[in-house]
Length: 141
Image (tube, rainbow, N blue to C red):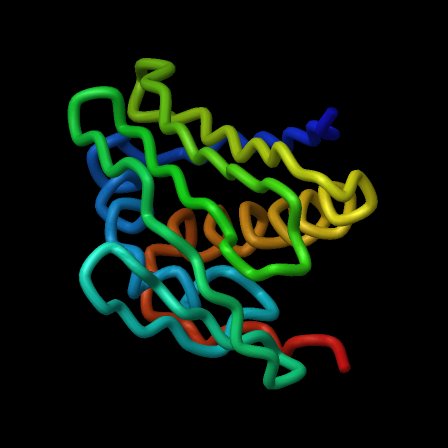
């Protein structure tokens, strides 16, 4: 059995603009607070957290039609993990971004879900300010 957490945000930007940021896995550290780097090797992304912990992930889906990005953390600490980021067109140049986390152990879903909520707030801040290369917030230590 897995736990599920979902966070959502509405961003006052066109879905194509928002999707361009999400569809690039190496760009995630620019808006995911607490992620300091992301190195791609084929369909494997290794992120480094603010504490210096490397975390291997398998990129499962990058669907430009559905605007869906999915990845699975493959660290042995997890029995299972799948996170999905979806971008929906609300019309009027607004987008709904949904970030869901399915995870075992359950407690990790809460931790990743909390981080995902902060990441979506930062993505919104950057995209609505028009400064998409804004300096990231300093990760908590």
